[in-house]
Length: 214
Image 1 (tube, helix red, strand yellow):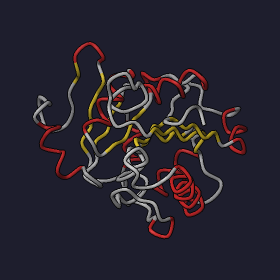
Image 2 (cartoon, rainbow, N blue to C red; image 1 turned 120 degrees about the vertical axis):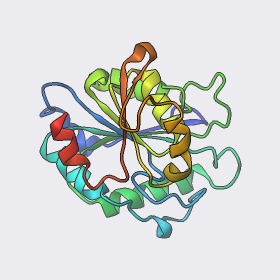
Image 3 (cartoon, helix red, strand yellow; image 1 turned 90 degrees about the vertical axis):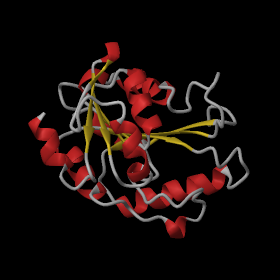
């Protein structure tokens, strides 16, 4: 643990995966709750971990194509005393167990901050993404971030990730309106000087084939 509010878990057993990383150094950054697993609102019990639609196919696709996956997740429930870091790790271990092996997850980054000010790791701040990108030499411009919240997308844009994807799973359905209010059309747009492209998808089922076309 980096400090009492920030945690970085590097899956050492998957480090060999980086030796065969795609030549473009492309990676996929995923939010956890509502993207990888069902959002259970301050999830603390590993027995309640359920994978989201399409995530296993995405993991298989990423592994086959040597695309490393990084998980970046806000966990303010820890600071709010809803659950502990030990509970969080139990949920993380269960998530990895049901995803199965082999998988392309190289690192899982989390924080328990409540406020974004002066807390660089809490999304929409880009700290978790930039930390991973620096350590593993990731080409963010060609990489992908997938989230269900506007703050996920903002973190991707703030980090300079080129392809940012919003899903309807998790909190996505209620947040889609807010996303659309910031787009020029219902498919994609370019954000300011960052030139991040935003894609709107229902879920991850078709994402692997979608990725190939980009």
